[in-house]
Image 1 (cartoon, rainbow, N blue to C red):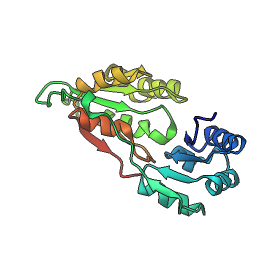
Image 2 (tube, rainbow, N blue to C red):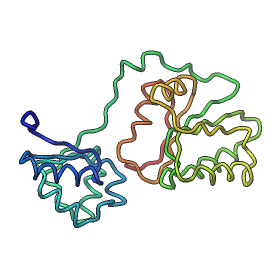
Image 3 (cartoon, helix red, strand yellow):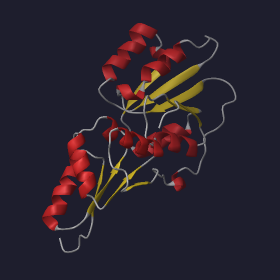
Image 4 (cartoon, one colour):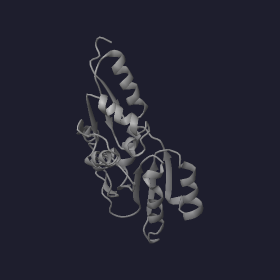
Length: 212
């Protein structure tokens, strides 16, 4: 371990507890980054979070909204710096073709979790005038997989207009974005959503809820 002079963990969950323990064991400083869910859900609990903040050399988060959320739970934010999530723009050399006519291809890259608010998007699309042709690609997996599929088929009757594509590799996601026209992220809460950043870099129109 002589070559290790710093430990960094992403997300304030079991990773940061491991980093904290290793820091004490190896006598090297540690830091961590909080992204969003770990502030909202507090997976390690408030007391443990406050303890690792105090012990860390420094800490980071991805947005000013996250700093505000940390203050609301009483966390000391003096050690925090904001570093938004970045992307490698060299991977987005070919922008998608702009929509002119025909079927509007909509992408939604998000895990299937209640916080992502897929149902609002699906309900809104089901209310569009029948003359508007669209196809929604939901990219991601999660706990709501079967519930959302049932909602699309049984409640909204738009299963012919929606594809559940599951979890895709980063390269596959980029391929899907390049053949889409719009990216929609209707989340109830976000930190700094990389999905939107990648969609913008792909030349898509992005529609998102005003959160984060």
